[in-house]
Image (tube, rainbow, N blue to C red; front, side, top):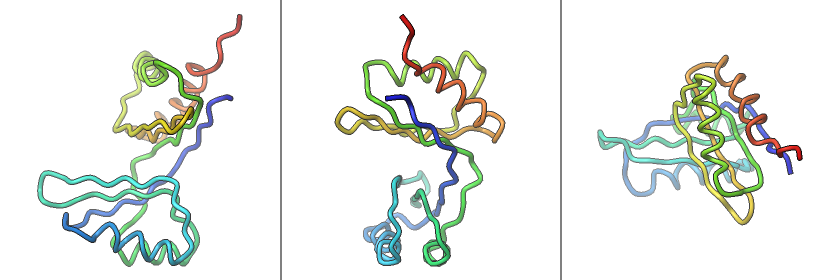
Length: 143
């Protein structure tokens, strides 16, 4: 299966790093009917934590996320899905490097035989360029 690439705008909130904060954000969003595809959370060095979510869509879900102190994050990103195979992350990283595109952050995982990655970039132009670079680099090789 070909790689699937989608430009995304994820929501981010910086919160106090303590037990229950993530549950306090996710619970109301689930109750609002939001079906999140990406949830990232991590502790920062200053005792706070960042929580990042995608997608936050619909007026009710947006209002719940905003009430929790979240907002659309300005860092552009791609959501990339594809069939897992050895070295696919290396292939993408090398292609982006050779194209002169800096990665702001990357989070990737494999579930079963498929991988999923969120890759963020410095600006919208790099994000658009990166989509083409990744698509070309991960395309099946012609025999």
